[in-house]
Length: 266
Image (cartoon, rainbow, N blue to C red; front, side, top):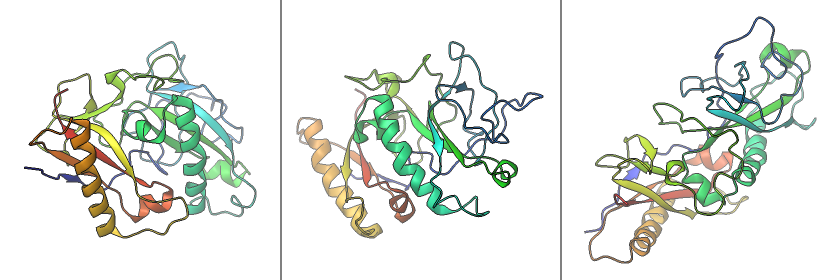
């Protein structure tokens, strides 16, 4: 029988989340959360899932040839029309970042939107501390990290993650699940023993489309994933499939896709 296993709605992209200090030096390095200077592209850091809880970050930069779990792939400053006044938590900043950094994230990794969403790689963005913001800092920093929101730990990245998803990516960078269901089970690299693999995604709307509602998103995801996973498995008589769909908050941030999962150890 066909079965659906809809996971709770959570974004794979670490939207509007930050990281706490992972080793402040005596003097703030350029690009730390208290600095008014724009951070540097290509800088590497050691971040953990526990770090990704705050919107600003002052972790020390490490040599990219050494072990690290995060790499800065793009930096910039907010447009003047957005970053005005004292509202450092303006939700429009997050919407701007999603559109800007998500596109650059795909280009950086060398994969399309569907492939990137099914990978073990996600991104987090950081902005200045309140102190730096009050001094006029308006920069943002977007980092690729080796894991997602449900990861128990982030995996180490190569010296650079640029182009990591070009061609046919290694299974160590693709997302699988080891467990009876997709929902609630930790996401792991597909190079490890697993029960489920993220195999396709469904696009549910265009950029300016209004949110269709939870029920419509779930039904469309369920129906598409049933057919899509069946095709991916080469149309067996019996198979299990799952889907992860997202809610209005993620839609507002810019996500328009659900993820389809096949029950397979391959």
